[in-house]
Length: 563
Ligand code: NAP
Image 1 (cartoon, rainbow, N blue to C red):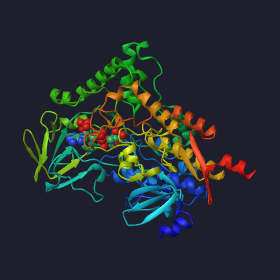
Image 2 (image 1 turned 120 degrees about the vertical axis):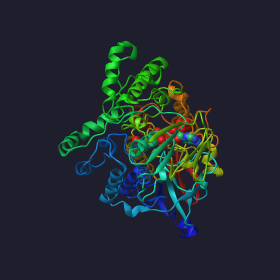
Image 3 (image 1 turned 45 degrees about the horizontal axis):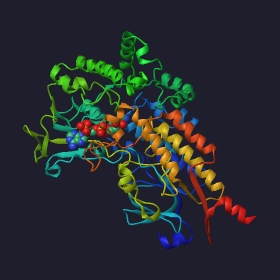
Image 4 (image 1 turned 90 degrees about the vertical axis):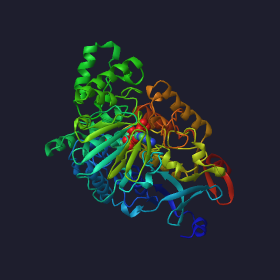
């Protein structure tokens, strides 16, 4: 496509969405429904985002399936049968494909094309995208559906390429079946991903060696099948279910226990925890007393309760102690949910290697060497996490006004307006960006909110003849400081997790500096705030209009001039 021609006659497309995951699929639907020429680009071979890539054994929702699916279409809700309360990756990918096919969205999607750069052209008021297939595409609106956990990171350890067996990051788990039977397998990491993989493969492999640097608090998923009758009941309750999600801070049906932690007796607290530990999903985390997130003593008590549950499940007391986190309390990082994870360590074919005591030295041709010994493997699995939230943005060369790079602007910590706009990056929208309502909640619930809001905003903007929007510096500064302030009351600020921008494998993201990645005010407050902003004619966002032969001026003045 000729760029010169495209810019003379207007951009190639009105909107380009990067990413064909949960966000991009819905965003392209709403924009094309309103008659916009919008396309989606994705580096993957097909749609699905997270659920396209993460094909590792055990990958499944930690949200109740029926709260994860889209809510926008009654017909879709009535047609789809979630088979499990926490559905697995193959089914989740089938669902997203079903949605795209049902609403005929594939025709807007292009795959196997990675956007390497996106530069804002001030003179033309367009975004110019460079793709790895050599094409340049232009658009008026650049919409980011990049995902929050889509930039996997490998450990910084020597010799990774020396290994002669099979090895992969969990995100890039091969599409063709991996033969595990009888194999000697090593896995690095004990985050949410590793906890799912380990529990799933321990009884299928010959031997499994788990390299743990820091343990994670984890609680039972308590998954189950959803029968036809149960699904029929869920369908009847969908309105109520989504209303409940909208009321809860996390966007789940789980509502916090609003009694004061110290106002009830210890017996009552234990009774609640005994019940929640055996219930499905995030109840033990999100239906708990709110003080566990802010009060050191309350957090210490729930942490000790969970530690005792781990001790009850692991036969060897020394191993149990190694599996209990000592550097952070329960719930200050997103809690991995597990299915018989701790019992895995009672198996004879599973070994836990504490690499905080005997650090990884290097990967060798045959396996992994720690300071203690060399381990030989057929397969090495890297479950070493993500350059979260901003990582996917950092991997595109995004330049705004005056050539400023987003990477540099966000190096210390992201700054945004509502998690959806960045000052100096006009006509760029992030329906589920850093500091938006999505990152710390039931992701699709936040995404739908963000996509709907961005769509309404673009409608408003286009209907009035505007062509350029840019969040003001002051609005961005206010929002970013609001997000930062919320961290100050949360124990999470002390945790080394992706919520605080920690990743030991990324330069400048090591421990020591908090990055303000997530909005911690909860969904209802976030929705209230963005609704107010919309109701106040999108205050905080400058909107202007280009006319072919006149300088840019606010529309108000253009009206005055016409009079
Ligand atoms: P993660 O929580 O960041 O865990 C990464 C693990 O790798 C940690 O145990 C980390 O140890 C270890 N690690 C990283 N670099 C290492 C190194 N150089 N040497 C040794 N160990 C190293 O990543 P994740 O498990 O992929 O999970 C990320 C997020 O994805 C979760 O919080 C969750 O939101 C989401 N997720 C959701 C589900 C679901 O159920 N739907 C499943 C999986 C993931 P340290 O802790 O010491 O850094």
